[in-house]
Amino acid sequence: MREGEVTVNGQVVNADLEVPDSSLVFFRGYSVPPPPTRPTLWGARKPRGVLCTLDAKEDISTLGTLLRKGEVYDDKTQMGGFGVPHHAYMVRRLPVTAEGIVMLTNDPEFRDRLTDPLSRIQTMLHVKVHGLLPADNLRSMWHGVTVRGVYYGPVWVELMRRSWSHSWLRVRLVETGETDLRELFRTQKLEVKRIRRYAFGPYRMTDLTEGALVPLSIHPALHHLIPRREKRMALTPARGQIRVDSDSGRPLSIFEALRTRSVAVGPENLNSGAAGEGGRGTAVWEAEEAREEEEVLQEYCEARAQRERSTALRALGPELDDEGEEDESDDEEEWRTRVKIVDPQEGVDEKNS
Image (tube, rainbow, N blue to C red; front, side, top):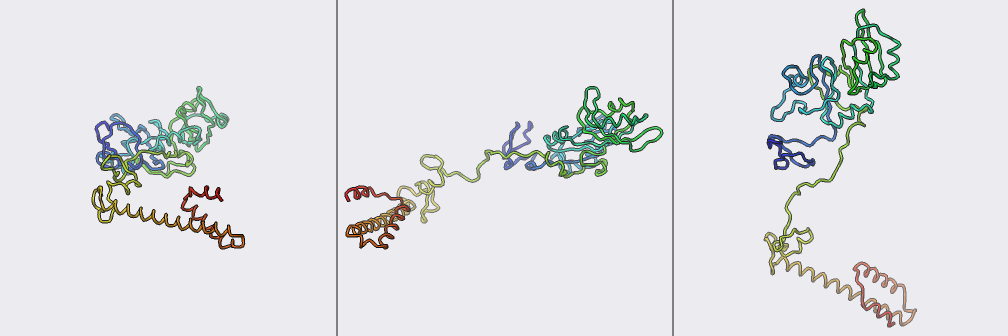
């Protein structure tokens, strides 16, 4: 962005700003689509002796360097074959001496929810230890353990296999940024020789290939952790053109555009810029308005005459007031409600009568 390689709707941007999905974003000439409604998740197998970072280091091999060897990256788009950017977020890092499954996502909020201890996502590790196994002490970890002021929570330890020199243990716990298995087993007089993260939540290491990045679907058990995108109103450039009055220069509404003199609406002058003072378009509309007013006036006069006739018949006697007259009065009131015309002499006539 500092080099002016990012454009939004054709304008170069040099600072962070919120961009709606309808905007056109380009980076180095390549279109950048809006983020998906759901985050993306990948998985990889980290070998031993590899630093758990996507950055390249000169003195040590990194996970990012290893993944780029098996995946062709484009220098222009800074994207890989699976669409993994350089700024992908690791869900839970592993030490250099450890190996196993590593999860990556493109959503930092989703990463934070997956690593939050309150989410209660268990991690399964295979740990190779040297020493005599204290069976009773290992069972006591099921109820929770605290080491040097760090609470590990319940830790389930099971024996996988044993030999005369070492043992393999299956350990299940909720990892945090402060948990250290070497420190944990040192309290049990066990020396950790090897750590392998076998599973993280519903994902297992056997589902992945070493040295490759595999896209993973979000398991249904993790759907409640997916961040919800907020729908907010945003100002976006309007499509089309705004009609402007040629005399005053102010914008016109869709209703004023048909009646103003600056817009030609007559069939003979449809393509002209303005009808003018004596244009044919304005004359057509004035004629139509005069015709409509004449029709309304005629209907009103007919209704007035009908009402006067009904009043005269009622004055002659009730024997002449039949059902037909009552129906005509009802029709008259219905018509008056429809056209919304109030007779100013109506109150005077009733008072005189």
